[in-house]
Structure formats: structure tokens, C-alpha cells
Length: 50
Image (cartoon, rainbow, N blue to C red):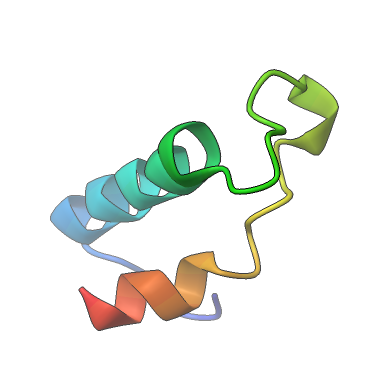
């Protein structure tokens, strides 16, 4: 990310990450721990929109 988030922003960032991986999961990798970083590329974009 390159910048420090406030505590409430950090919590939102974590939750967005979980939603992308466990709920959104368009390619069905939520059951694979090895793919945990699959949607990290989307995280900054979605977070900035919120």
C-alpha cells in the first residue's frame, strides 16, 4: 500500500479482503489456502472506492 492506515481503516481493509476472497470469489478458490492472495490486486481499488 505504501501508506499507514488508521485503525478503523485497517479493519475495513481486512474485511474487504475477506469479502473478496470468501464471498465474491468468482473463480472458486476460497477453499484453497494456497490461493489466499488471489484477489489482492483488487483490494486497493475496492478499498479506495469505499
